[in-house]
Length: 96
Image (cartoon, rainbow, N blue to C red; front, side, top):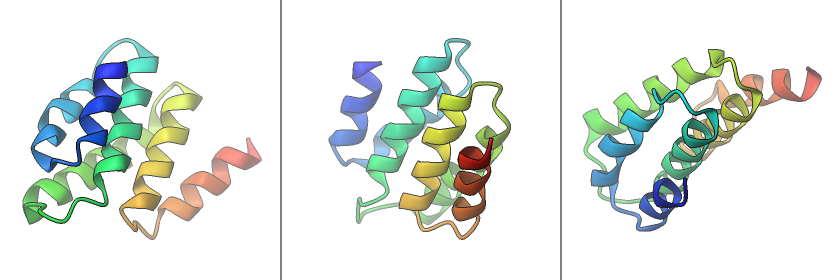
């Protein structure tokens, strides 16, 4: 899990591919860490447009994750990417 977050902290969008793979892992805390790390990458300036859009689309899919921690981290990451739907995702999380 620490490795996933470290990838986010390096600020290199090339780490996104590895983190996207981790969003499908069976261990929920690892999925949450990957989502959190992807959110950290949101501030990177050298994004490939298609990769950035893939990250956002994949994070949007994790809003239906069975684990509430994953959903929270995903919603926060989407907010960092400026996704207009993030507000609704986070609002639902708070209300639940």
